Image (cartoon, rainbow, N blue to C red; front, side, top):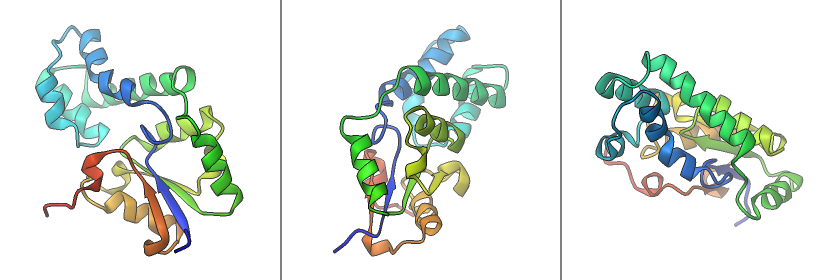
Length: 178
C-alpha cells in the first residue's frame, strides 16, 4: 500500500530531546528551591505542558504563576533546541526524501506549536511540514487519545489508511480506555 501522508512526533522522533524533557522540571524546581519529586512528575507526564505547569505551580509552588512557569519552560526549551539539541541520525535525510517525493507531512506533538516550529527552524526542517499540531490545539487531551493525530490528518488531507505515523511514545500506541 503506498504512503499518501506522514505524521511525525517531534521530540524523540525527529530531534534528540528526550533527555532535556526528562530533566526540565528538575531544573525548574532547582531554580525555585523546591525539592524534585519524581513520583509527582510521573503522575503528570501525560498532561499538556500548560497543564503540567498548572499542576507544578499549584501543587509544588514552582514559579511565580502557572503562566509564567509555562513561558519560562518554553524559553528554556527553545534555547536548548537552538543550541544543544540535534536531529536524530538519518532523520533529516529521510524527511527531505519524503518532502521531495511530495508526501504531505505534519507534526503531532505534546510540545507547544511555537516551540516545535522553533525546533524545526533551528534544524532547517520547517519547510518539510504542511502542518504542526499540538495536544494544546485539541483541548489538551494527551496522546493516549487520537485527537492530535486526527487533527494532523485533517490538516494534511490524506487518507487515514495510507498515512503513516512515526511516534516514539508507548502511551501513544495504546488504545484509549474511554
